[in-house]
Length: 240
Image 1 (cartoon, rainbow, N blue to C red):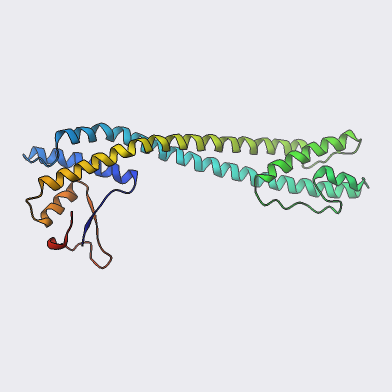
Image 2 (image 1 turned 90 degrees about the horizontal axis):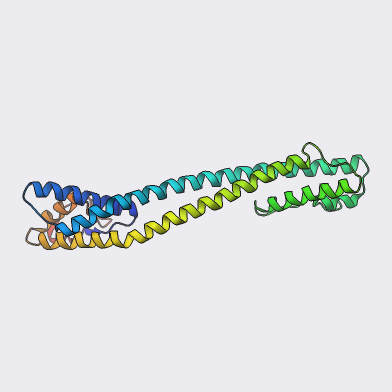
């Protein structure tokens, strides 16, 4: 049997409200009224605000995705620079016969084995340690790293940190948009509930198939059992 399916997301709620208002105006022009003026006015008042916030949420979600991609790309680049820096450090310490203890300044074991971070954000901390370590090596009179240099690495680290901070801001903007939608959602649900109650009452004298057809014109959706074709019309089993 077909049963009324309440909207499950904000776009579906907005679609039902908008369709109900349009259909109501068409029905009024033909001398029919199935929904009260009060309910339609409430829908008309909510629709532009609801739509604006839904669109804003979508925009912020897109920007958030862009910022996350930019952050991930910057971390991948940072990881590449750190690995190159390690290779340079190992070769230079060996080539110039520098003390093995200098490995510690470059976050390496005495045998030159490199760390294996399990999270991308760990590369931020490692890069900072390498830059600091290179400064300490210079202070002891040894040659610093080059190609990439600590200055090169610092520029990439700064970029990665900036991208990470932009993600935090994008997250916050998206959260604010979500909060605004959440405040409007109960109102949308209540108006939809009122629309359904009024449609059920004003269409009560019509047969079930007619009630369902009219309700559909108001944006109401019905859910069918998996074994029932969506085009079927069985009035005696239809519940609206």
